[in-house]
Amino acid sequence: MILDHFRLDGQVAIVTGAGRGIGRGIATAFAEAGADLALAARSVAELEETAAKVRAAGRRALVQRCDVMQRADLEKLVDATLAAFGRLDTLVNNAGGSPPKPALRTSERAFEHALRFNVTTAFLLTRLVVPQMVRTAGGGSVLNISSVAGREFAPGFVAYGTAKAALSFMTGELAQDFAPKVRVNAIAVGSVRTKALADALTPELEREMIERTPLRMIGEVEDIAACATWLSSPAARFVTGEVVGVNGGLVGLNMALPRAFDG
Image 1 (cartoon, rainbow, N blue to C red):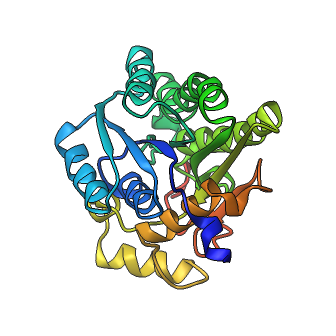
Image 2 (cartoon, helix red, strand yellow; image 1 turned 180 degrees about the horizontal axis):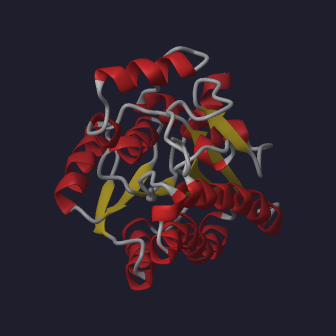
C-alpha cells in the first residue's frame, strides 16, 4: 500500500524547537506515523506538553532541555538520544527565528546572531548527528525548517531572510556531501498560525496577509507537519537537496514593511 511508505515505524527522530508551534506539530505527526521522539527546546514545561501528545500516540518521548546556541547542549542532546533509544534516523532542525527589523536598525551583533541561530546551530547539530545515523541506522534524513523569506526579497528582513537563504543553500550542499547515506531537505515555510504569529496578528494584518497569498489563507501547523512527515519517510527516498515550499504559493512576502527612505 502506498500509504505504508509514509510510515516512520521503528525510527527515532530529534526535533529541535519542539516545545510549541511547528516543532510540536512535527513531533506529534512523527509519533502518529510510528516514530519515537527526542524533544529539544529551552522550556521543559512546554516539552512535557509535547511529550504527552507523543505518548498519547503510543510512542516514546525523551524530553531534553537544550539551548541550540550552546554546543555542549547539542552534544548532550545527541548522547541522551542514543542512550535512550540506541539509534538515530531523523533530525529536524526547527529551532530558529529572528524578528523583522529595518536594515539601518540591524546591528552587526543582531545580524550575526541571526546567522548563528538559524544556520550555524543547524550545521553543528547535523554534523554531530549524521555519523550516528550512519553508525546506528545505516543512514537517515535531515530536515531543515527554512522560510519563504529566504528566497523572496523584502524590506525589513535582511537578517532573517539572509539567514534562511543560507540555511536553504546549506541544505543542498549537505545533500551532496552526505549522499547516498543521508538525505537532506528543507521546507520553505510561509505564514503559519502559531503563537508567535498570533502575538503579532491584528485583523488588518491578517486580511493583508491572506490577500497577498495566492491560496488566500494562512497555513496551519499541520500543513508543515504533513510535508515534514513525507520528506522524512521512505516515500521521499529519492528526494534530497530540495527546498519544498509550503507557503500558499507566495512569490513575495505577504506583509509590507517600510523601506529605509520611504517618506
